[in-house]
Amino acid sequence: MAPGSGASSEPEFHKAKHVRYWLRCLKTLLPSAYESQDSQRMTLACFTLSALDLLDALHGNTSVEERQSYVQWIYRCQHPQGGFKGFTGASGGDASSHEGKYWDPANLAATFFALSALMILDDDLLRVKKIDCLHWVRRLQRADGGFGEALGKDDVIEGGAGTTYCAIGALKLLQLVPPEDRDQAEALSLPGLSEEASRDLLCWLVHRQTQYIYLVDEEFGLYEADLVEKPSHHKQSSSSGSQPAPISTSVEDDRRAGPPDIVSLEEDLRSAGFNGRCNKVADTCYSFWVGGSLAVLILPFQTVFVFDQVF
Amino acid sequence: MGKYSDSPEWEDIIPIPQDDGGPNPLAVITYTEDYSEAMSYLRAVMAKDEKSDRVLGLTEDIIKKNPAHYTVWLYRADNLFTLGKDLKEELEWLNKVSFKHLKNYQIWHHRQTVMSQIDALPSTELGFLERMFSKDAKNYHVWSYRQWLVRRFGLWDDELPYIESLLQDDVRNNSAWNHRWFVIFGRHADTTKQGSGVTSSGAKPDPAILDREVSYAEEKIALAPQNQSPWNYLRGVLKKRPGGLKEVRAFAEQFADVRNEHHVKSSHALDILADIYAQEQRTEDSGKALQLLATKYDPIRKNYWNYRRGLVGLAPVQG
Image (cartoon, rainbow over all chains, first blue to last red; front, top):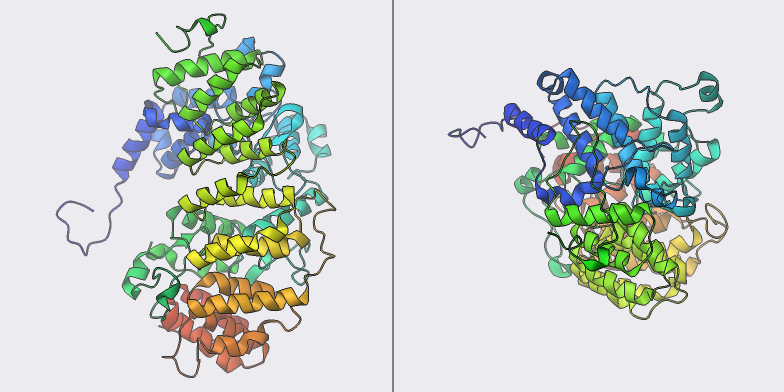
């Protein structure tokens, strides 16, 4: 809010300050506090480029040479066997033995963000090892349908958290990469998963979403191909597993069981938004995950929430 | 100079500096000297895939500075297994690291990797998890790990008393509700494919258990009618019973009377009643429940409730 403006005035978006902040992230060193993010540098890079791109301030504030050198760095992180690494810090360079290379693998999240960043930078994508990357992503799929983040020694799939979003995103972006070799590319049916693997993936997503409660039953037809387009009978089945934050108004509540979660209507409206799980506080990032997922799935819910005005 | 460059133990190692290539790398971090040096030694020992006690010390050092470093954990696990280290000791060390970095997930993946090599559940494990949950009863990584642990050691029948104690502390703990669902119904739908396939849906839950779970959810709803978790749970259980939603019509009506809009104690009761009335062809009552939600009891989702009215053939409410 601008200095001196009254409490009733609309919040102001300080575009110039945002641009300055992101340019600082792009062109100077990040503070030491980012050390713990070292292995996610590709993610930070993509956020930085993407933010400037959204602000329409990337091309105007960087030279062609600078953008080429950013592209160069991203390709430097491409793994020789396909996919991208999250950072350069695990690379032993020429000193690496065959076994030593296990400790510098490609990473799924980094691959998704690297492909996104290359596209933001208008790269022609001709240096992307498309086929290798595709094979590698496929090998990251676990028996349960979800995706791990990296291949370890003996091709063990590593990574515990859900990087499946990044797998789907990477497969989708790989469709936009020009074929290295037309015959070879045609032999592989993009988006890259067999029918069975897609089914397992869908199954995994469904299991993840609403904590097993709604969709995992015979009645709903778990293997129906149009599953994700039909959750309209259950408002809880938004694609990321998130739900709108519990919003209440004058509903009475018995306070015996815990701290009160019922506040006045005005307070509620100020805190409206999305949370990641039922009974947790709203968090801005879920407006992105939920809104984005809904937009991807093109559900009728696109217009059923009014969260954007109040958060 | 530095911790490693000054140490005789490391004098045979030539550190490998980080090489970002060209002139404008992205997301460059101002590394502290300690971190930068330790990483240079890590790159050198990783490059030759050394397995040694000093490597374990170095990985510990890096993990303290950057627990999100994804390959240092893998390298450490490989060292532990190759050197035949006491894995219980590793778990004890991990306990301390876990308390420091509550939101880190690499720790939990590592714990799972280590625990995979242990044949019987260590007697201290559940107590440790309990202490983790006392810090954050909804920690997603810890709950995911606990689900894995239940499968790994077949703890299906031992979890309910603990879940009950968590719900006594906080009846709104959705993670505890979720775990209850997992141990009662998840065993019949093992998603790991470790056993028999994507889902082993052949086994149906015992009707007596379904009845018990309906009563349990109702009991908890009565304590706090606006608590969404047990309503969700109740809907889930009812989908598995032949009677369906309408079995709880009378129960839900205690918390919401569509004929008397001042007598509403729970928006979730209105929600479920809207579905029940629609199933019973009582379109007007269903529409009234949705109208109350749209206008008075949950107006933030007015558009959603109007969408639901559309599903039963009614016009949206205005205002």
